[in-house]
Length: 216
Image 1 (cartoon, rainbow, N blue to C red):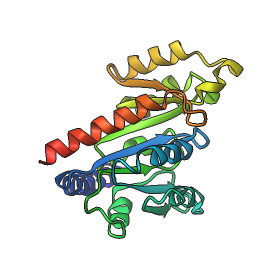
Image 2: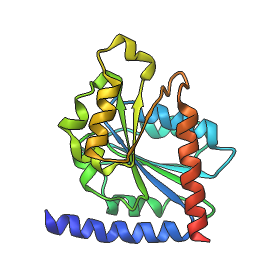
Image 3: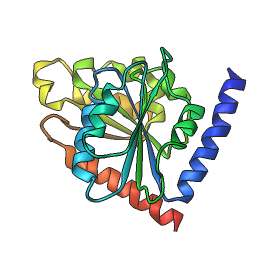
Image 4: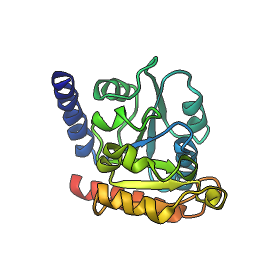
């Protein structure tokens, strides 16, 4: 495992250096199957595609369904199928980048395979990780799967429009996430209705500006 992670981290560092030098902010988007990652991405592409140049790498076990959804928004997208693997790794991303135009790119989002365990351990060359937790999953998930929340700079509490139909305790989830990762941001939102989306978009805009400034 140490050898596997060591080689992965070496390639991830190469990917990061290459994209950072070009001023590209790279986000590794994590979360369970059905948490709403792809819907969030679709709404994000629709909102920001006229402000910045974006691209997406979609990770999934099989099919190109998620990539097809992103492509409808006119954003360059590459699908990676892991054929049963539970996470993306840096060599997969490095290979995908060879087919993805990165010149002038502002934002690259890598939607990882739906899983709250394995993806947290493998760096992909990202600047930051964000994890999507839907209120329909229950507020016990941060303590049950702490590593992914510890590694993520941002937790998105998605499907907040459904919270009144569940027993999800928003305050308890925020407290647990703060215990696991002090200082991490927590954003309640609904990708479906648009509630809270402005804060998410502003977070992305700020990260893109920071990366551009650092590259200059």
